[in-house]
Length: 102
Figure: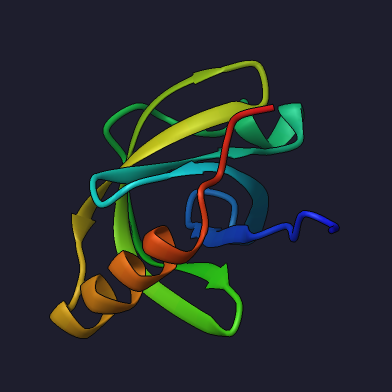
């Protein structure tokens, strides 16, 4: 029973580039993801990333994420803003999966 990987992607406006991280934890309050360390170095605390995409197969959820903190390549974000329909999809996903930090 292979564990499926889920991803988070958003635009880093300061560099005009998308960065992608592998989700390690998710809740109704926020997410944590592993990024390449050189990309994680570009994250500035309290930055809000608009329209971040969470690829939670089979659905993709969009939300505004506020960067909270990081340790190495692991970064934590709080949900800043999310449409109600996405909140429902997120709750379903959390109910179906329990992601654990490796």
